[in-house]
Length: 431
Image 1: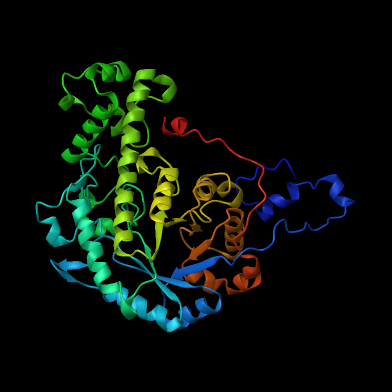
Image 2: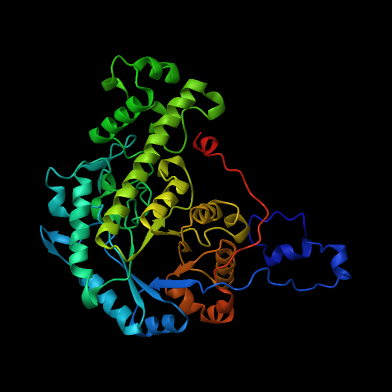
């Protein structure tokens, strides 16, 4: 009935309590005409599996198979010696299935040999003081490091029969997504121990990060008097500028916004804006480096994490603008993360809207396994978001092959009819 709040799936137990609207008893239900002409087919991608699985994926219409490198280290085992075995196996599997190949490299977790050099600067948590093997994005050596890594990648996969068609850009965070580390990867604890595993925190405790914040603040306010008037804090010099105290509590500030003064709010907003801008800048550096070495390959940016706490550092629309600049596509890992009504009124749809505004191809991906009904919902929400691509782990399409065969004809990219918009004030969100 119209009064049921669509915040989750209705269960069979609840059905007897739901009364149908009276007019449905007499009104004839007429199927609606399709509003638009069908557009081009939606691109389908999946992870590379074994031969039989890959052939089945190809028969279902999947055009791309992806291979992930180790998420928690770089495959340069010693200086100048690279281990491409996982990638080579994935490329061979894709070629055998007659589909294109996509590679997911991870260059932000330092290998053992690099972590022992002065070129390595760990990410340091403000609250926990933990030091991660993930490199600080403020490390001045990082651009040179990514140049080194992508040059090696291009030397191995840039030409000839080894040529890869697509790169899923490893950016940062737990799974190479455009977010700060949150400790979501299950192997971090095993590999680095509790003190070396990430957790929700602001990972800007190193001196390069602090210097970056001071420089950002100085460029914005130019004088200490202007800074004091904005923050209500009066440092004696620019070297004394520091982070606001609220940052030591990643999920709850000392005060809620309505308890803060205007000056306290401005101090916080400046910090979180700088924090997000830093991650956006790092993402841009990675995308530009990859584009220089692979001028014709498809580049896809992973945007993950099923929530938008400020501690993640992700500014979604800014990340989409980076894709527009570098000719990359965007892939949201929020497909099916919530029931369809919730997903279509939250970050999945807003990320898709930003993609359409900037003319960036949009993909979705689920966070884990999907049942049959969830898979139908995923297809529906992808169509509603005008997705140009649909990615899933092979267990889902193989386990739901009937669903794909039944609905494949509808999986096209075209305009949708939507006369509702939602204002999302980012300042209010950051507070």
